[in-house]
Image (cartoon, helix red, strand yellow):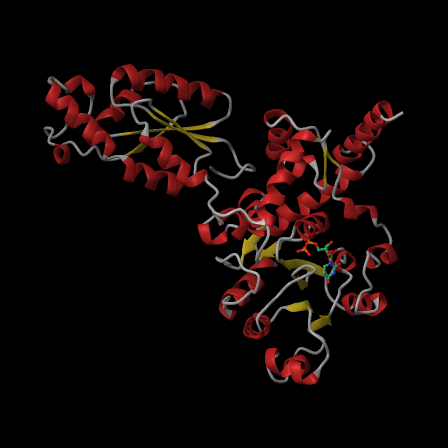
Length: 426
Ligand code: UDP
């Protein structure tokens, strides 16, 4: 539930009966003795049971027991005072009414986990609300929603099946980035996998970083010269991968958001230099006003070269997997703006699992981007350079670099793969 970097904090929520309250107190003490922050959630009349226990540093959180609301006498808060079957029904009814106050407590304190009594099965659903990563139906790729099989959905199904029938899978990622998923893949799904990335880190000098498969539309020296005039972490790089499609009105809105944010930027746009075309999507006089502050690259940018520059402090990305990893490897926090493919999943990894990015608020899986307002863009642009995501992104970038260095996880996985192939493919 809570963030990994802070102290482990466990909430205990026992049924209001001595046979439940006493062992829970002992359990909480055991955790507290090992340096874990332990809190017991209970109702006012049950608090004295805990205050009688000596020598503990277990916290107590109190929630009101709705005895009267459930038809019980005032103060009937412990199963000790339940004397008939009818009262026991009412007692259960009252405990079920504790869902909302429990949820509020979890919301306020954000503990790492909740240990709830077996008689509160509903507590699992309450807790799940805080740990769940949710995608709305609108954010799911269209091919997962289609009921009729298409050529593409068939191809994807076959691709997934082939993961099980092939010898193994080579992954452009590194273990420390997603250990839970890497373990799940190997141990639960039982697929052999080698995490050998981020592969873009094989490019060391400026020329290698600039020349990656496609001629950039800007001279790398010109680009570096522009960046070299900027302060450390002061420029935001905006690029949406190799095939973005934005409506003209969305590009216009993006330009307005950038200007309003007052941030320095490099913005990659797939638009020609045709003057007439410019009129449609660029606010009048935009480039003139942005001179020295914002650089537009029309066409293809040397992305890795730019991201790796020390002046770049943020990345607005469509969350394509390559861009995501390149952002991670460069240690920059991201503004996530997913559009299609599996990008909405990657956004969740960035914003909710790794917590190295903030979302611009895209809600709709689409091939043509539209509808994100300038205010949302401005807000994300302003926040990204100063938010707490930056420090985490920097630490993760260092991890990525260590992973590919001699002795690192990706370096070792690659060695292991080569060894295994040598053995099997004489
Ligand atoms: N790329 C680039 N310059 C550009 C746009 C993209 O170098 O102007 C590179 C980027 O560095 C990444 C790849 O193209 O390696 C895009 O892959 P990604 O998975 O991010 O997105 P996709 O294009 O598949 O949606």
